[in-house]
Length: 218
Image (cartoon, rainbow, N blue to C red; front, side):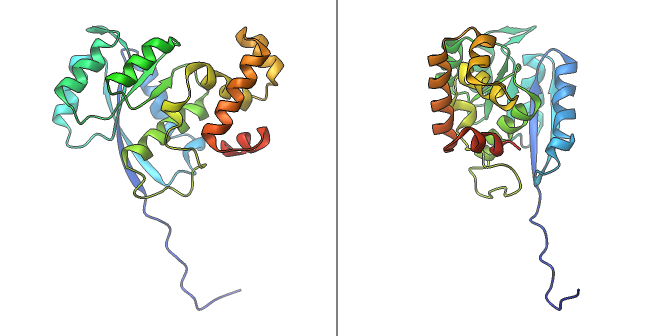
């Protein structure tokens, strides 16, 4: 069947530059592979990556690059431990958009990082698809949502810095198909704590059921 009407052009891709600061090269390469995987093919944007294995290398790379949309900063680097790296980065580049990329589940440390100016928190323990969506939500926030991406699930901008580590872990296990009771056993939490976490997650994502929540990430 033919039509005389012109076929609309696809929306232009948005290109993002992400700097990954981690002293484990396999972690840096893993993120790049994740962004290039089939899970990312539905995204209407492309990625470029800057790698750094230390804070000083990251500062130099950021200084030399014209535009970095997001910095993913590990808290434990050879030349910087803890929040000192974040403080130094934001002191040198007050306009930098930095998110913590860490294995820590210490809510006090994460809260301090956000108070210092971090955009959000991406846990290294998160499942690959959740990691990708968290990074995308931060990138959309970096772009001030000026050009909404219509081909990605409607993950809210605030996801990466609204949910605490416990809630992010519960979300990951829900997406893995676990029930509340299984999650409670896996995480050594009271069932009431899991239910409260689920309520907070559903409120943050503006969903009204467990199936609706899961569908957001499909």
